[in-house]
Length: 302
Image (cartoon, one colour):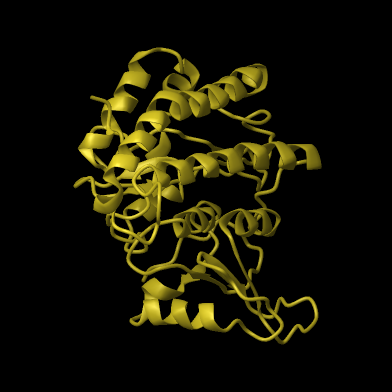
């Protein structure tokens, strides 16, 4: 498996990412941070056979001195344990991993205030990520969709009619509040001097199998901080942009002109960002499968 092109001279440990093999999932948030920063990492379960067994083993037993992990993604940092430098540091949860990596990868904002603002926006985006998933499994995540279709229809209807516009209005208002500095392109601060905002887009492949969490970064001048854009729409590699789970609903929202900054100014240019562009064309990108987000036509806008 190839490595991301290095952008920085700083020496980094051999970060190890643990996530379920063969799917982008929530592990993609972490992959894209490394890719955008140009920092090498090892995607453990996708770099060799037996990936699922490695995750199960880690869930059963953490390295000495580390608390158990509940679920992947998990990040292992060699020789970084605070009490014993000979032991690795292991921890999980996407927000925790992203918050830890920000300063380590020179992706932190210029002040504590900027870091707090960017985390507020990013964690709201993660809330949206979770709510989309729950539309097709509103009762039991361990049960089949077919066993909860009636409840899923109710959940999806409420999500489309109430939750999507609420989230989109929030991100549009963040862009408007910062418009004097960000010009509609950045959520926090000025594009050339601000820190970064962790974010994602819902991106699908040419055969439209699964939504991919996605990070859009921009490098300011000679500084090492990156400014990430929260993108609340989908992109494909070469085909028409669609929202995988609710394409009809998203098309309706895009046409409404209620989110002109979000879709008209903020959205363009996602796939061409350095680091991200190379990653999307590389063998490091996991193949799509019907995972976190799923398209069931009956749940979409009539």
